[in-house]
Image (cartoon, rainbow, N blue to C red; front, top):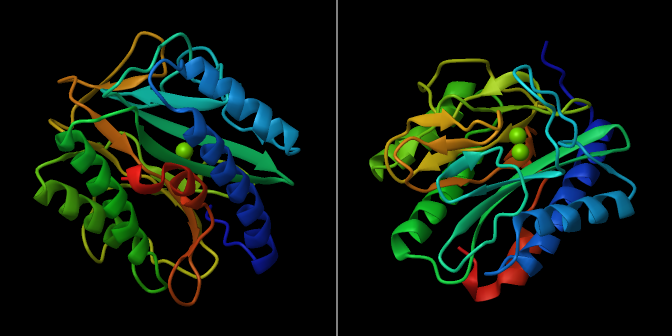
Length: 265
Ligand code: MG
Ligand code: MG
């Protein structure tokens, strides 16, 4: 069942996503060599709760194991998504994908950004840039009359033409009162196929792109997903609403990029 949102509901989604954006901005201030992913998690949880919201990820059920134990996902280097924050110390040259979700006034926010830690190789920075560009190419296709396959095609075509891998096992999703609603939003697809997009459709678009092969494996913790070849992966995510014109991007990277300045990807 796909729930199209009213304008009022979209404004509530915007508030929740704005809080995610601000939380990621707080993370941007502290990502540096020497910080642990657990510290990033504590900063995020405190900021989210201080703003009257709940971190959606904390306690998120896992059909194959224990619920997610933290407020954000921190996926370092070869980790693709769902990395568990903890004692991992970030070091110069690492990348860390931070995925953040909030529940505020009955609606969910969901957005992710891959940060550079100190000086990162140009080969990896290019992966990050391409993934972020692919996200915006996907968003350009999120207009009424286009189909879900057009979003996936745009992302896949751009990333594969740059010789990157497109992860298929994890996908974007509808979002609203629940973090994961229908439809699924794959980062691959065929032009002109899939559900037709309509005003009021709210979705998270989230390309997960690999420097090498697209194959992934699940770590023993039951959550963390990494590349099989242990090459780096990037993850950028926005929550958007389909409107009558260009998509309305409800989350934002502005808070992050204000902090990063010239070092932004
Ligand atoms: Mg997310
Ligand atoms: Mg998501």
